[in-house]
Image (tube, rainbow, N blue to C red; front, side, top):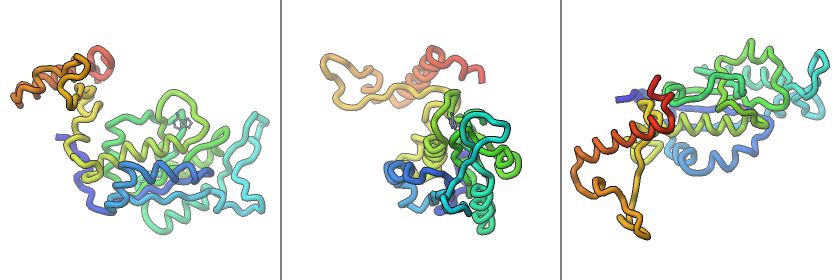
Length: 237
Ligand code: ADE
């Protein structure tokens, strides 16, 4: 059995998100699993506008890069002020930076982060952040895949979703997080629901047979077959 966040009890997880676009979180944090988990007291989200931590009149958070490259760079000061204020209140397990050159998010990483209590996620933007932020403040750098997005907000939402859904109680049927694709390095088997026949398209007979053990074998075979065909790399892990 996978060790999924067994040590967590209610209100144990807190995720602080640091961003220049706080409005991007309004809808994703207020729908579906992320909303339900907050309503159940399993997780608290706190979204911080980095502009609130600036000391300049125009609330500017970025500046030109030294050395004359194109693009703007996020400055150290507002990020440091925000992280320092948060760390004065509680200890953080990880200070995460979302960046395409980070470690690529996968299910084992989501599993282990779901057991943590306090996380900061800094959303990258513009050309990047002043590298001193990464050298001195960040403890973990995460990419959500080998492509470049405009900012780190969508990755922060994806990371949060992958973690929070694993907290016991966040999704209705706790077993279903265990049977997700990638748990055990296998893709999930196909699922069907009523009607058993639609337009002549039939549900596999085995699923209607009532033989629990044979159905379980069929699911395992299907998971293996789909993984071999679609993601053979997973079987090598
Ligand atoms: N910011 C821009 N692209 C990203 C990616 N692929 N993963 C994480 N953060 C990003």
